[in-house]
Image 1 (cartoon, one colour):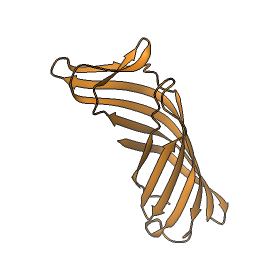
Image 2 (cartoon, one colour):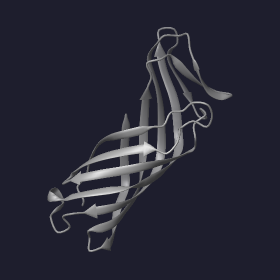
Image 3 (cartoon, one colour):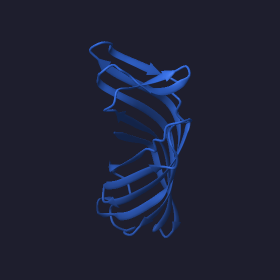
Length: 165
């Protein structure tokens, strides 16, 4: 599950309001739900398979993110609810919070917070297709989210809603 909350998003006109530089600032929240009984350790940071059967097991990561995209607006003179365009670029994120939450009959609810062996920075390739106030988006990280060992490269896709063009 991925949620993006863009606190600031702006466009800088480059060519006749058709080609624009789109940039902003926001937060990206990821929730990774696991079917396997894995658990995160802090000292040393790592992941191990547990013998406890978890009813709920997830990793939550929160990033401060700066997107930077080249935007092509194919309907620059239409109102925003009739606009059509595409954007592509990169986003850079800084991990400011991470936690592993697990619930079982044996341990009830527990959380492991802090240094879990994740990379502090994330660089992702991003793209959007805008159809009026609705955008279809996709994001793919350029490398694994772990410092050592595991190879888990996050990706996401979905819908964005906005009221500005």
